[in-house]
Length: 216
Image 1 (cartoon, rainbow, N blue to C red):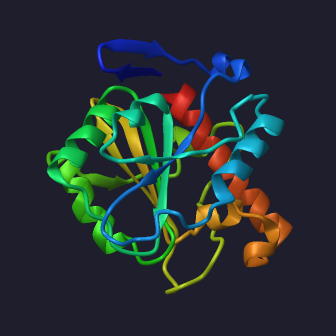
Image 2: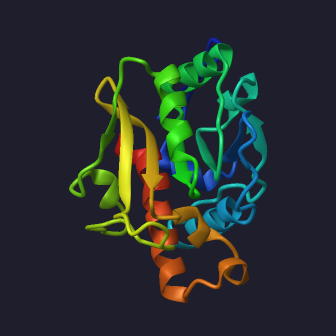
């Protein structure tokens, strides 16, 4: 993966995982949605990856504002919430530059975000459709193999889906819907999910992270 920070071009490879010189981050956005939902999710995913993928990612996971230049410090950013999302034109441009420059965004609808995030993503990439990813896509077949998305929580009886924005042939943003994937990353006592559900969620999360660094 290559990532731009101003005029600096940073190359990040899967082998550099062992250096422990970088962090992942959670996206902080405006609009009133709870960007801070699932606070234990990404730290737990980091721990799982460090144990199962031989990574050495920092366990310190900061929040980063969508319009901040600091977004370029993080090669992988996670976004979640239950409600409204609003990107200003400046924020949309900043996120577009981040993703076009090599960054990766994973969005997990925590139930209630869907109608808002779809509109806002059109601001970021007005000419790129959010398309459903088939289950033969490489993101489902990294360290762990999946022929469907794990269904962690049930809400409306809909099937879990994964969507993506593809720019110049590369998946730069993955959006998971009707799965509550990041709920499955949280501490076990938060939602009371079974150990099998949590394992499935963490394995799929590890696949997403691995793909963001290796599969593009």
